[in-house]
Length: 271
Length: 264
Image (cartoon, rainbow over all chains, first blue to last red; front, side, top):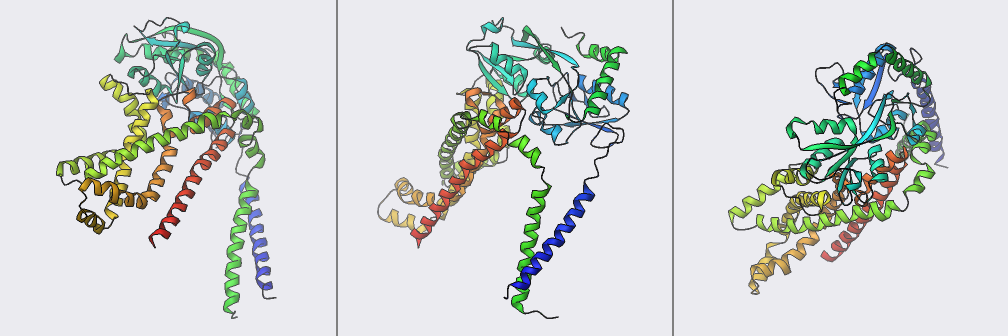
């Protein structure tokens, strides 16, 4: 008997809270607007996620507007100019980008991070047309005696976690001890420290190490592998408006020569 | 209107329950269940993880933790005895060591051992990058545990020492057979804390490079994340971490209860 008043009170409180809650939720969910049918997280700004640094594709640059520079950054800036939106770049963890978590949890509109288009990734994300043909390559000590991928038996080969370079090494460098690193920064340090004897990764990054002025002549790229891979910009699968707009901007950049100009500024003198 | 005190209490309790229920309800209702099951509960991905998640990843996590913990305790014992030494230089050295390694992030020490030391001295620590990383964890955890052990040794009543000495035992024998066994019982709970911290710190080893058979739980989960473009592996390794660490804390709680009974 004595319990009754309190139970009634609980019920009343609960229903009041529930009412308040529904009021809340109906009011709160209308914030995701789409000013120009691009479905951007924040109006008028293309929020871009990238795992920095990965020169020459992305690197820090205090003097630039976004705080970043690199091939990906320049291409994205041009695309944004054509879409008439600002660019904001967020330095993000590599894993969140490649798993699609960053895109699917609305942390960013677009991922520009030297990311190869693969069937697995296409399950989780939508991709632009390929914007860069990526080749893999093998960097070794200049006097290591390693001349090709067939010389790697029992040799420690550094690769970057979750990359197509790692996959290529697993498939083709049989007998090698493949050591997986979070990023190129640690890989290159490990090569210099003698913890690994070779690096298998994207060609432009290895070329940068080959031409490293502080280690002149110490390392050289001995082989390149044309794997037919293309980098793409990742976007939310459902956001076809943005994907189409990015593809159109890329097409325009290729026909008006601005893409080639950016490309040449990074890669023309690479080899 | 005046209410009976018991009624007021029930009102208050009822409100507290209602708030709790509302918060839980809110979280459940606001969650996007489709997105959760697509991103974290993907059945095919979960199947792919088995059995490597246990046979490789969990096994390595336990192996690295136990090695670092055992090495750390031995180092800590030496440091603790140095800190209690009558020689000032020994005390000073131990203090300097402890302050140095407690003041640095484990990640930084790992990078220095695995990449910095070979660069500086042309000497690669045994076991390659992982061996160097475990040495770094021993150096760091030893510094933390040294202070714990010292406090434990000092917490043993002085009378124990005096009694042992008056029976004719020498200093070392007193320490090993009388003081340390009692100190160990005192420091078991804080040492468990260090053990669980170490379980998680083994994930830092990935920074200096790992071979496929060397991956621990976090790298394993991150590899899965990128391979399957799905976050289910993260949820899976989170559960395995709990399976490792919760029994450890329960074991200590049990030991503590026994110890309390024994000291009564």
